[in-house]
Image (tube, rainbow, N blue to C red; front, side, top):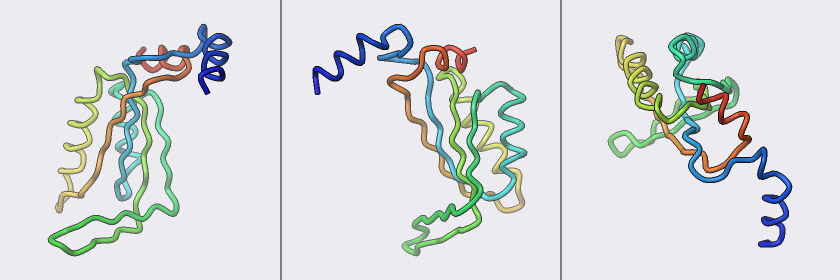
Length: 125
């Protein structure tokens, strides 16, 4: 394994970043209205890339010791620079709170440890 890693790093060190990238992956699920939220995040340059999975997403969570199921959800996978993560979280929370009954949402941020140098630089811009 060490040999394979060394060979990879030697061949791709000029195009592949390692270590702190300053870019994170954001996962969340939400009911409909994802197009409106995505547009807000793009317009405010908070995210660089979004994948919106609109089919076969089933979400469950524990609510007062009862499992709740929601089968009408979208899964969003977004990329943002680390300096915009707090803005993204605030925007999502504000967006979800505006409904008559606030919509539960989950949001997880995972820092990227590696990736294409060009892509990472593009996301930061």
